[in-house]
Length: 210
Image (tube, rainbow, N blue to C red; front, side, top):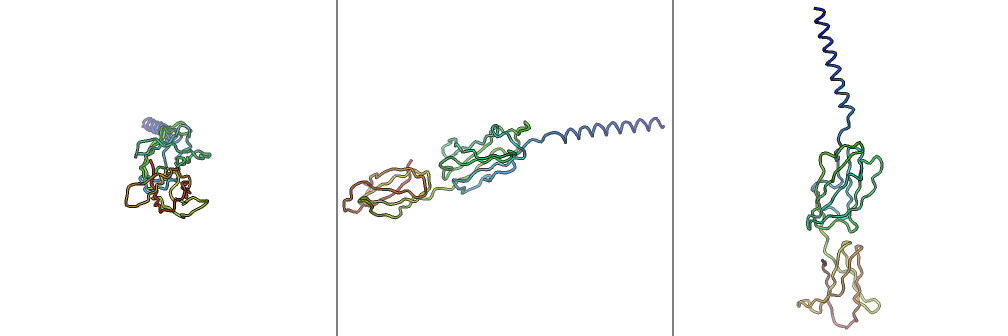
């Protein structure tokens, strides 16, 4: 009877030892990283064109192996964002929009290609998403006047747009002539009609170019 008790106790101790070893190995293993959050939430709408995308991961990542890709679904082109600061401990990765900003009025699809933690574990969980940028407001002509013998005015519009300036002597006809084309770099763009003043009325309009 005592031998049976001794054997049973020994088997219990052996089982306890095996469980302890397994739990110890599991606790000591490295969990696979996930994307905790993004500053632009999935399916966000009316996103400003200069908004940065900030990825927050659960573990320090190898940023060279964790590459966010952005696609403009309006024309299926790949966007080239500007990678920002990703300071130690490499849990946060900041990505700025392209130099001219995100395309206006577009659906932007993003996904993280590969994704690898500094402990060598692949990125799991949510690795893609989408957001929608706000449309550009229509351009507006402001502050018309004559300066230095030429007619000038300013155009209020979003930076990074291509503008076509046209004039016509009659609003009821289709005889619009191109005065100039320009690419905007700020909210206000000054336009000068270099043609000689004739003393006749001219009407001007601005449209978004290709």
